[in-house]
Structure formats: C-alpha cells, structure tokens
Amino acid sequence: MKKQLIMAQYIWIDGRMPTAMLRSKVRVIPAVHRLKDIPNWGFDGSSTEQATTSKSDCALRPVYYLPDPILGGKNIMVMCEVLNSDGRPHKSNTRVRLRQAVKAHKSAQPLFGFEQEYTMYDKPGEWPYGWPGEGFPGPQGPYYCGEGANDVNGRPLVVAHTIACMTAGIRIYGTNAEVMPSQWEFQIGPLGPLGVADQMWLARWLLYRLGEPMGISPRLDPKPIAKGDWNGAGCHVNFSTRQMRAQGGLTEIVRACKKLGRFHNQHIVVYGTDNEKRLTGKYETCDINTFRYGVSDRGASIRIPMSTAKAGRGYLEDRRPAANCDPYLVCTALLETVCGSGFKP
Ligand code: ADP
Ligand code: MN
Ligand code: MN
Ligand code: MN
Image 1: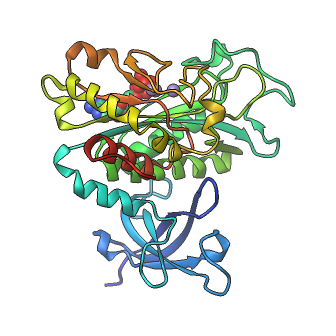
Image 2: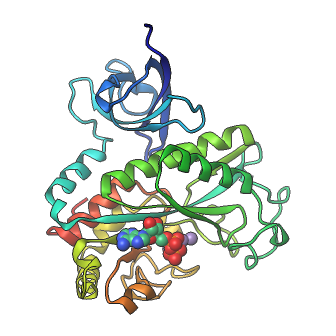
Image 3: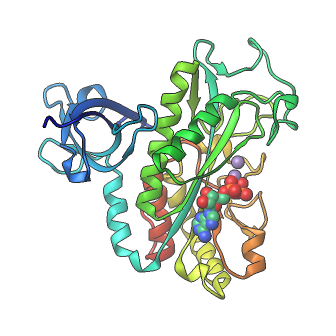
C-alpha cells in the first residue's frame, strides 16, 4: 500500500537583527507518527541573515511538532532548531541554552504562562488595522475588554487564531482586547519551559499565517505608536516553581523577587528590542532603570497576584518582557536567576 503524503510546515527563527522573526517552508513527506520520522532539512541561510552566500547552507532539525490546524488532516507544523552545516548549533539558536537550563533545573518543576500582546496592522497602509485613514481613533478608555459598541475591531482574526490553537493542541489560556484599539492579547500556559516556548513560537506563526488572507499583519513592536497616549505591547511572563506552589510558597516568591532585582540589567538585555520605549513608568509599566516588586501592583517590575498573596502560594508575574521577546531566552533567564546562580546574557 502506498503511504499517505502530507505537508510538513518547517518553521524556524531567522537571524534578523535586532529582532529575529519566523520563516517557514513546506516539505511533502509520508505521514508521521513520531518526531524522529520527520527528516532533517536545510535552507539558504544567506537569505535569512544566518550565513554568507559562499557558505550558505544551514540545517533544520525538527524538535517539536503539532497537527497543522489550518490545513487539517495529517498535515503538521514542525518547530525546528537551526544548525550550521557541520551540525553544531547556529549562533541564532537560543533554544540550545534553554535545553541546558531545563536539564540543570528540572527538580524545580518550573511552570510558565506567557501573555502575548500584539497589534494588528493594515498591510498597505502601515497603520493600525481599522484606524481611520491617517488619523487617530478616540482616546483610550473603552477598548480594553470591549466589543463593537466600544469600536473594538479585528476580532475575526482573534477567534480564528484561538480555534486554531485549540485544534492544534496548543495550551491557549485565553484572549482579550487591549487598552490600545487594534491591540489584543492571547495567553499560553501554564506549561514547562520548552513546551511553553515552542508553543509560543507556533502560536505566533499561526497568528501571522491566519492574518494573511484577512489583510491583517500582526506586529510585536513594543511601542507601535510613540506619539500621544497609546499603550505599548508587552509579554508578561508568569512563573512558578514547585516550592512556590507549595504551602508557604510566598516566602520563596519573595526570595525570587529579591534575586531578580539583583540581575535586573542582565534580564533586560534579553527582554526584547526597543523595550526602553515601552518601560517608561507610564501605561502600567515600571521604568526600565528601576526594579520594584509588589502585591497587585501593575506599576511594578514584578507583580505578585492578589490571589497568590491571599493563598500564601502560587506564582509571580514578570511584567518587563516586551511583546517581541524571545521566549527561549526569557525562560532561560528566569530559570538561571531564580533556580540557579544568576543569568548572564
Ligand atoms: P493578567 O491578570 O496579568 O492579565 P492573564 O489572565 O492574562 O493575567 O494570564 C495569566 C497567565 O498566568 C496565563 O498565561 C497562565 O497560564 C499563567 N499561570 C497561571 N497559573 C500559573 C502558575 N502556577 N505558574 C505559572 N504561570 C501560571
Ligand atoms: Mn493578561
Ligand atoms: Mn495585557
Ligand atoms: Mn499580566
């Protein structure tokens, strides 16, 4: 009997500076049942800022896959690590370091939940989707968690994306309309570090891919509209260890906050590009040069949720990462600082 053929969407992170983005291409392969049935592949690294023209070959190593919810059937999405042609990790491959951190701190049983904020752009206009011509919508206030009566727009993409994530088996936790019109959020988790980071990248890919036929271009710029009173876009990261979730965990959470304060500058290095435009001390942020933690404080660097403070255990919320952060690097930094001896970028 002939084997059924499927489309495998190979997805990887490119080498663009200062903010890497996703690339993908399709390979038609026999239907698979295990990760190791998916063949390694390659691409032209000179077209993705990962190699020179004379030594252009980079390799793709499949590390995680899920059903492709857009194509359906047995088609799959494959998250890949990028390797040099000699098989060693490419310098843009930030997942390698997370793998090592995960191994070192397994006994802490870390869990992560990401809140991904993003802004929908109008492709031809280079202006937020649904904003009037070259002008501005009414001032912020009604849009957060609003609907049509508050001039909220772009929901068809949000709904399609949520369904796609659920269908693929991505642990999507929820979604909401944000403070700035055409800005939205989805949450992923709670999951272990590699799972949450791989799923974050696949969820981003699905968002971009679903926006294509709708003429919507989702962007992760931390401060899309710099002039005027418009919120930035962040990527809060909720984090806990077994100790934090256990009875008396609040003591451990406070200890973690103090330690995070000592490594504030090191963390900021990997918390996203242009984050200084967002972390100004306004619009529910703490300014980039200050570290502060507090219960229920949305102006702090780290917020201890009210529910955690009341229960005496739970998780902390790192509010510093920007929307365009690399989840592999953010998870590495939190693991190495909270569970290890401190993060060095
Ligand atoms: P906010 O009130 O800050 O807007 P959200 O409801 O948007 O919070 O997101 C909450 C996030 O917290 C989700 O991503 C969820 O996965 C995560 N989360 C919940 N419990 C835990 C936990 N014990 N450890 C780590 N993350 C958690
Ligand atoms: Mn949220
Ligand atoms: Mn938010
Ligand atoms: Mn939050």
